[in-house]
Length: 82
Image (cartoon, rainbow, N blue to C red):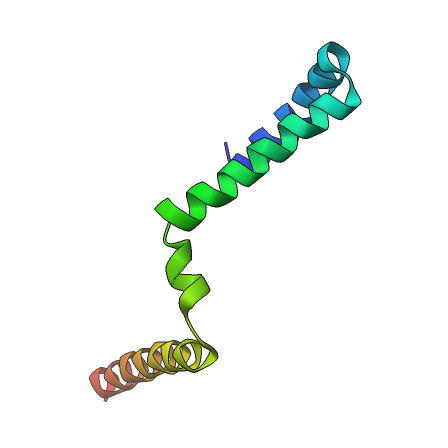
C-alpha cells in the first residue's frame, strides 16, 4: 500500500471528522498547523536546507555529474560487449 493511497483514503475521512467536531475554520487551522510542521520537519530533518541553499550553478554541476556517470556506465557496457 502506498502513501498516496493511504492519503487519498484517510484524507476525506479525517477532513469530515474535523469539520464535524471542530467546525470548518478550526479544522482548517489544524490542517495548516500540520502542513507547516511537516514542512519544517522536512527542512530541518530531511535535508531540505541543503536544497534551499544550493545555487543554480551547484544544481547544474550536480546534473552534469549524473550525466557523466551515466555516460561512463554506458561506455563500460559497450566495451564489455566487444
